[in-house]
Structure formats: C-alpha cells, structure tokens
Image 1 (cartoon, rainbow, N blue to C red):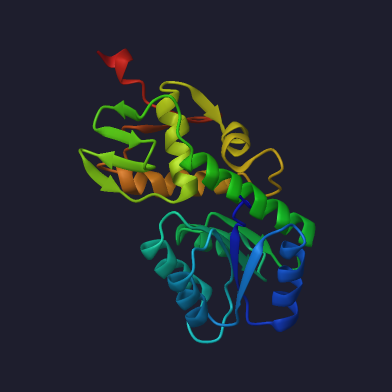
Image 2: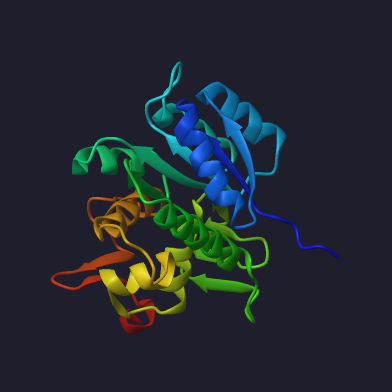
Length: 237
C-alpha cells in the first residue's frame, strides 16, 4: 500500500513565489495545493485534508493574520508557517500570537523552508503518535495520547501541534527545568534555524489557555536565567 503523501497548502498572492515554493516542496514528495488569496486558502482547507499551511501575511482581501485565526479556530491541529517580508521582532511575534507554529522572513532559502516544513510535520506526527501511557494525568490536567486531546477539569482545551508537544513534554517531566534550547530541540528539532523567542511566545499562549491567572502562573513556571518547568505537585504534598 502506497504511503499517503503529506499535503501542503501554499497561500501566496505572488505567482512566482508560490510556484517556486510548490516546485521545491514537490521535489520532496509533498502534494501541494496553491491559493493566491486568503479566501481561497480557507476554502481549500475546508475541502482538503491539509497537514501544513505556508501562509503569506500580505494578501489581497483578508490578510494572513485573519486567515491564521480562521484556520486555527477550525483546524486546531493543522501546522502553520507564516511568511513575512518584515524582519522586525514585533511582526514575527504578532504572527505567533495568532497561532502560527513557525515563521520565515522573505527572501528565504528554499532549503530552509523545506526543513521547516519537515520539522513541523515531524512535530505533528509525534504529537499524534501513541505511547505506552494512554493518559497522562497531573492535577486538573489530562492528556489523551491516543486522541491527542488535552483536558483541564475534564473540559477539552484546543492546542496547536506546537503547544501540545510542549505541554506533553512538561507533563512527562514534572519539576524538570528545561532550557529554551532544550525545548527547541525537543519540539522544533535540531535543524531549527529560528529565534528562541518562539519558545517564549508559545509558553505565553499556553499560559493563556491553561492557567487560572496567566500573569501569575501556577503550572508553567519560569526558571529565571534558564527557561521553564512544569510544577511538580508531588513535591508540594
């Protein structure tokens, strides 16, 4: 039985860039769907089983941020890599706050884009893989590793693939202080070329979803000068 190809949706209004991305991804064996507008991109996502979206910010009609918001709401497990022509940190972080898993600044090396796509697909596949424990439970939190669903007080909380990978690592290692680079290596892979600030943004998003008071986190703790850790409740008992 032939292995199913991963499907990549490229939402980019510039024909030359879109075709260039498509050619490079197809060379790696991916099935690529093109969309020159955000509206077409959303329609394609609703009609096809998309694994990863390569999404430009500047689009005619609705922009990439709005597309990201819609996709993240309707397809929480889809991978999203945002393309931006702006290099300022604030632009990158804005995209990440909307739920983007990764970002790239134009102009970019096509090889790097392919590596980012591979890394994100690996993250999604790992998040979906089962392990020996069907459930991981810690206090009010529970991960159903078979269905890849995260709960707080038995209420489902939708997480992006990146957020899920981070919380799973934390709950499997309570009390362990992770350096930002360690989290990058675990979640994004050793071939990640981006800024470690992507970890901080994802932690901030996670806290907003799981903490009772995100400004005073009780579960995802900051270890000053190092990184982050999941509070070990056993030490408190």
